Length: 94
Image (tube, rainbow, N blue to C red):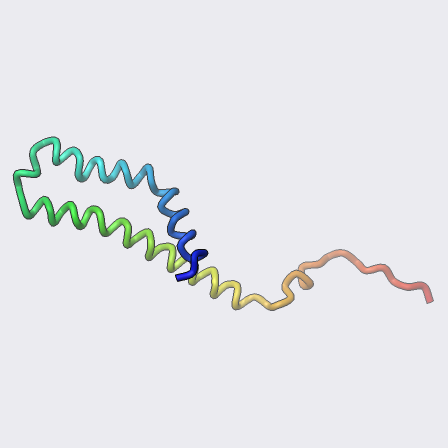
């Protein structure tokens, strides 16, 4: 995979690091502190879902966003900067 494609999810994970850490703390650390580890398999299944689903959603969101950006760029005319030029060109005296 292209290195540039990895930069988008990496930046997204940087933006969501604090909310994601807070989410992990509330959904994993607090139950562990209260003895949820004694539940065994149900807590392990819960922990796996809590860890995997947000990461998948962030990557999926990045893929959707980049696809939308690509489609938007493909729909624009190739010389769009000429269309938006409002400066008048000087006329030659004849």
